[in-house]
Image (tube, rainbow, N blue to C red):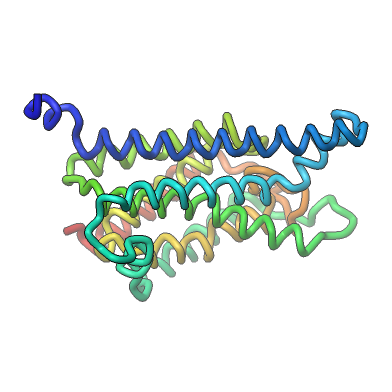
Length: 272
C-alpha cells in the first residue's frame, strides 16, 4: 500500500490537489460574498442591473478579499507539517533577494514591444478615476501574487524534482486561467493571463533559488502597469484606465514576447 501511495500520490499530485482546493475555496468565498451582497440589495429593492453594476464596480475589492482569505487559510493548513516556529514568515523572507539586472531588461523589452504593437491612445473616459486605477494596480498584483505565494508554500511542503516542475509549469497556468475565467467574473480575461502567469512561475522556479524578487519586479514593473494604465485589466478592461490599446496584441505576438523573455533569462542565469 505504501509503495502504491509513493508511486501515485507524488509531490506533484499533492501540490495539484492543494492548488485546486485553494481555487475551490476562493470560488466558494466569492459565491458566498456575492450572494450576501445580492441579498442585501434585494432587501433594498434594487434591480438586478444595479446589483450587477455594484459588483462590477467593486470587483477587485471582492476578488482580492476572497483570494487573500483563501490563501491565508490554505497556507496555515499546509504549514501544519513544517518544522519551523513561524512557517508563514519563512515562506516570505527566505525567498527574497535583490532583483537581478536581467529582469530590468525583460521589463523594458516587454514594455517597449507592447506599446509598439498596441499603439496606446487616450482613454474614452471623460475623466479618469485615479483611485480606481490604483485599485486596479493592487488587484492585479494580488491576483497573481497570492497564487505564487501558495506555490512557494507548496514547494516548502512538497518539494518537486526537475521533471515535475516542468509539468507544473504548464499545468498550473491552465488551472489559474480556468478558475479565474469561470469563477471570478473576469469579463476581459484572455490569453494574456496564461502567458503572464507562465512567465512569473518560470521566474519563481528557476531563478535565484526560488526567489520572490524576480516575479514581484515583473509584476510591479510590467504586468500591473500594463493592466491598470493601458486597459488590459482582466476585470475592468479599459473602463478606468488612463489609456487604451488601439490595436489588439495577438496571442502569437504576446507568446513570442514571453518566449523570448524566458529564453533570455534562461541564457543569462542557467537553472541549477
